[in-house]
Image 1 (tube, rainbow, N blue to C red):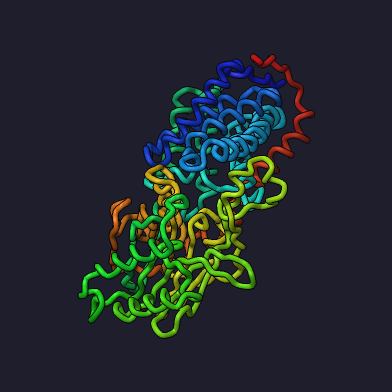
Image 2 (cartoon, rainbow, N blue to C red):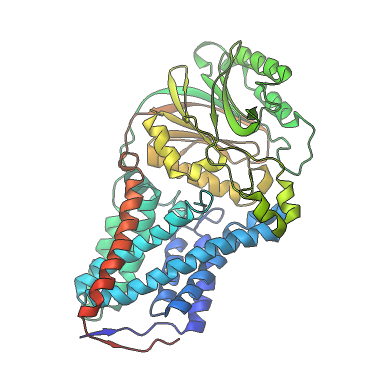
Length: 519
C-alpha cells in the first residue's frame, strides 16, 4: 500500500512561494546573471506544485509564470506602456498554469503507479523535467510561432553548464537542470534511504551534470570580420529623418583603420546590424552608391540589414552587397515578431487596443529563403534579431554548411534594459551549441564576437559608436546537439508526456491511502 504525501505547503504559502519564485528565476538571467538562482527558482516552483488539486495547481503555476515574466520581459513596457507587457506575461503564465497541472498530476500519479524507490527517484524526476520542457516547447511554437524567451537553460550562458548545450541543445540542458532539482527534492524526502546514502547520491547527480566535458569544437582557418555599431537613432519612436541610422553606420565604418583595408590585414567581410541600410539600397540609388564606395574602399563585401519590398510585401532582409554587383544574395527574416513586426489577425485584435495596434503600420512577411550566404568561399549563417531563439533556424544553418554565424539585431527600442543582454546570452549559447563563432552586431549594443567555446573574442561598448575587427575561427565540428537537432526536444518532452500517460493507466493497480492536501 502506498501513502500519498501531504502537500508540503498550504495553498496560501504555496502562492507566496510561487510569486517569489518568479524574480528568483529571473535573477539567474542577465543582467544579474546569478545563474545558481535558476535552480533555486525551479525548486521553489516544484515544491509549490506538490500535493495540489487541479485548480490550485493551475493557480500556483499561473502565479509563478506571471511573476517571472513580469520581471523578465519588463523591457516590453519601455515605450509601449503596460498593456503589451501584461498581456504577454499573462499569456505565458496561462501556459505555466496548464503545465503546473501536469506536473502536479505527475507528483500524484507516478508514485502510485510505481511505488518503489526506483519509481520515485528514477522515473518521477524524468517525467517532471520532461513536462517542464513540454511546456517550454508549446510556448515556443504556439500561438503565432510562439515565444521561446525565458527558457531556463537560457540563464546558463556563463555558467559551468554552458558547454552542455553542445551535447544536449537548449531544451536538453533545460531538461537536465529540472531533472537535477526534481531528483534532489525527491531524494531529500526519501526517508527509507539512509542519510549518508542520500548525500552520496546527491553528490553523484551533481557531479554527473557539472563534470561533463566540453565538446571539442574543431576549427579550420579564420576569416577576418569587421562589425560596425553606429549607435544611430534606430528606435521606433526616435522620429529620426530618413537615412539617419545609415549615416551613423557609414561614419563609423570610415573609422576602420586604413591598415584593415589592404594587404594581409584586409577584412574579408563587413557586417552591419538589422535595419541599418535604409533606404533600401536595392531601390534607392544613393544608398547603393555609398555601399558600393564603401565596399570598394575596404575591398570586402558588406552584409547589411534593410527593409525590402517585393510583390507588394515587406520583408526584414539581410543583403550580401558587393561593389559593382549590388545584392548578390539575400535572406528574409523567417520569424517576424507578432505584435511587433506584424499584427496577426489584425481585424480581430484591433478593437482591444486600437491605438497600440495602429502603431504597427506595416506587416512584415515571413521569409522562405535559406539562411546561409557564401561570402568569398566562407559559409555564413544569417540570423536577424529574434531569429536567434528559433531552434529550427540554427538547424537549417548547420545543414547549409555554415562555418560562422552573423547575428544582426536592433535593440534600440528596448533602451538600456536587460533585453539586449538576454539576447546576447542566447547568442552565446548558440555559438557553443553549434560549435561556431558568432558575430552579434546591434545598432546600439550589446555587440560582441563570440568564439565557438562561448568566450568573447572582442566587443563594442554598449550605446556608443564603435567597430570591432577580429580573425574569427571557422567551425568544422558537428555537435551532438546540431546532429540530433530538435529530436532532443521531442524526446525529452515526449518522455514527460508518455511517462504521465503510463502513470495514469497504471495508478489504479496500487491501493492508496491519500492524506488530504492542505488546500
